[in-house]
Each structure stands twice: as C-alpha cells, then as structure tokens.
Image (cartoon, rainbow over all chains, first blue to last red; front, top):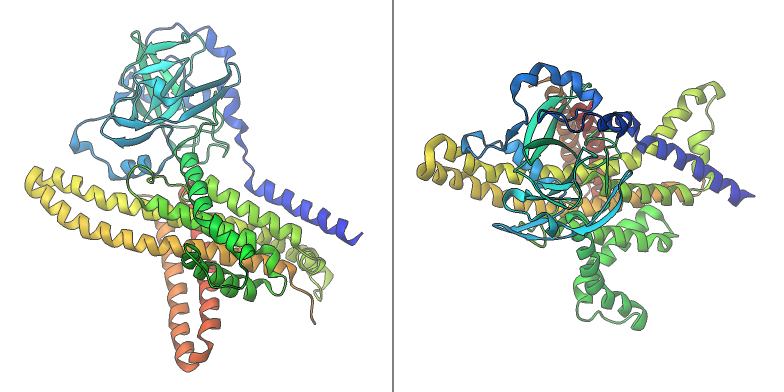
Length: 445
Length: 65
C-alpha cells in the first residue's frame, strides 16, 4: 500500500514535470497544411508559398526581390554573432577540411511522404555545407537538411542553386531566417526540420521530421564507445580483484571514482548511497567526456553536445525521475502537506513547493546548457576578432593585430573551458546527489 | 539593443554580487576554522550553483520572452 502510493505520487509529479517541459508546438501546424499549397504550386517564380503566419509580416518587403539574397561573400559583412550560432548548431554532415565532409546517415520522415533513409553524400555538398542536389525534395543548407515546401517538386535528384535567405519577422515579432533554393529557374521556399519546442528556439512543427544521426548523435556514440573502451577494464577490476591495488587504466580513473563516492555520494545521499552510484558515475563520465570532446576544435570533436538543450533536458529528466521514484513519504509530505504549517497557508505553500520540485531539474538543464554554450560562443567570438580586425585595417596589419589579440585570448578561454568542463560535470553530479539525498532523507524530529 | 539585454545584464550583476558574497564569506570562514574547509567548500559550491541557476533562468527568460 505504502509503496504503491509512493509511485502514484511520483507519477503525479512527473506529470507536472512533463507539463513544465511540454511544448505547445501545434500553432505552426495548420499553416503548413499541404492542401492549400497545391493550387498555386506552379505559380510565378516569385515566392512560391508563405506560411500563413509569416505572410502578413512579409508584405512590406514584398517588393524587395523574389528569392531572398545569397549568402554574402563580402568580408565586410562578417557577423561574429551569426558565425557563432552557425558553429554551435547541430548539423547533418560534419565538415572536416576544405570541401571534405564526413557524411552521416539521414533518417527523415514527412507525414505525406513517408520515411526516407539516405546519407548526406547524396546532396553532393560543396563549400559552406550547401548541397548542390535536391534528393526527393530534401536539400542541404549550411550542413542541415531542409525540405522544399512544395508537394509538386519532382522526386529524385534535381540540381539546385546556392541557397538564398531572407530575414522576416514572424507574427510574434521574432526574427526568422527563411531559406530558398532555385531549381529550373523556379524559387522554392525551404522548411527547416521540426523542433518540438513550440517554436521557442526553432521553427516549431514543419513539414518534416529529422531523426538522422547528426553530428551531436555521432559524437555521443563516439563518447559511449570511448568510455566503454576506457572504463570496461577498470570496472571489471573492481569485481575480479576487489580490495587490491589498482592496475593499468584503473590507476587513472580510481581518483575520480573515489571522489564521486566519498565527496559526492556519501555526504549528500547518506548510508544508502550505493544504489545511486551507477547513475552518478555514468552521468559524471558521460558529461565530462562530452565536454572534453566538445573542446577539440577539429573533426572527431567540434560538436556542441552538452551545449544542446535537448541533451541536457534528457539528463535532467533522468535525475528528476530518479528523485521522484526514490522519494519517500517524508519527501512527498514536505511538498504537498508541509507538516507544522497552518492549513490555510498550504494554499500558497504547496504550489511553491511543487514549482520548486520542477525548477530543480529545470535549472540543472539550463546550467549545463548555458555554461557550455557560452564557452563555445566566447571562443568563436575571440577567433572572430581576426576577421573583424582584418575588415577594419586590411589584410596584413589588421590580420596581425587580430591574431595578436585573438590567440592569447582564445588560449586563455580554452584553458578556462577545461576547468568549466570538469566543474560542470561535477556540479551536475553533485546536485543530482543532493536532490536524491533530500528525497530519501529519513524524518527525524 | 533592447530591454532584454538590460535584463541579462541585471541578472549578471545579481549573480555576481551573490557569488562574490559567498566567496568572501567562505574565505573568512575558512580562515577562522581551517579544519572545516571541506564542509565549507561543499556549501559554497551548492549555494553558488543555486544562485547561478536563478541567474540563468533570468537570462534565458530575458532572451526568449
């Protein structure tokens, strides 16, 4: 009885959490219905289709030109902010060097088109991650897959132009970039992949879903593999040779493991700490591994995985579920029926406590995301100094000044980011342990 | 330049004041009682993380709302 009640409480609070993280992403849905596009699919090369919500915001610049403007090659137009955002975003094809790309599998789904399995190599990508070929209506723009918003677009391979773009304001007054490509002289508007955040950070629900192995997923798999190879022998040694001095790679990992056990789990969780050690160690090494691999500026690294809010959200939700399901009666009583408080006060206190229980994983998610993202943006901004100074004072002197300023600052920031990588992995584990500890603490007064 | 930028700045000021206070008090506490360094460090990290969490919520809200 007691146990089942505990699980019901856990489910209720998890439902609250689901609401807190939920996405009200349906509002963009109706604007992309295919039916209303069919009749004007073959219209003039002017903007083929507009989503209804962007249409009226678009009116004032309708005379500005048919198909957006091409990406500027003029170094005077260099924008450090945009460059940074491009580099921290997730992509489908990993840029290695020059026009060489590491191609990854694509798993795409469009409700009216079905599943599509392919690889980014079919897009015949050239510089800037832009594909030169549309494959079954999908194109590659800046390394990310986008879909041509036109049901009448021919299947198979079609040569497309360099993508152009246009800045628009959505109905909510947010800036949005819309991309276009030209094929056979006709301008087609592109849809970005669906993001399930209600359009908060992306475009909301669009005409297709992207389940591909992207750069972030690839880096996560790589980290899994690395951790498995490195930690397997160490983990085995604790069962095969218990109590003996560490050997080999175990020497390197034992300080971390004992640190998590003695300084994180034991003081924060209490006598039952052993149940939670697997989660704490896994999350610590996983976050640390991703942070450190994200620090490598070239090919196998360069992904911004822990600076992706979806990744940190899943990690935070796992902590939240563990806290909720291991919480004892005492923990739930302190949330819903704070003992020793006059009954009328509970009307105020209970919502505050429930909100507090949800805010804990929320800040866990934001802390890791913001720290890592901020670090990457700052590094890219420092590297951008070279380009900014070159624009100001010309190639030669400007570049020299820029490099003189940029290299020490970047080195300093990289060193700081190494510290942050360790610290954030530690803090995530530490706070998870604290939350678990507060949930299983026994009542004593 | 808009109000959100000012909001993010204010959040940074608040967090900076808070974490600065933690640091100064922790240094004082450790100087007074060096044998309690371990406990104090734990409290410092936890409180700093909580302050940082509030500041991050403020910053994210200022950018997305």
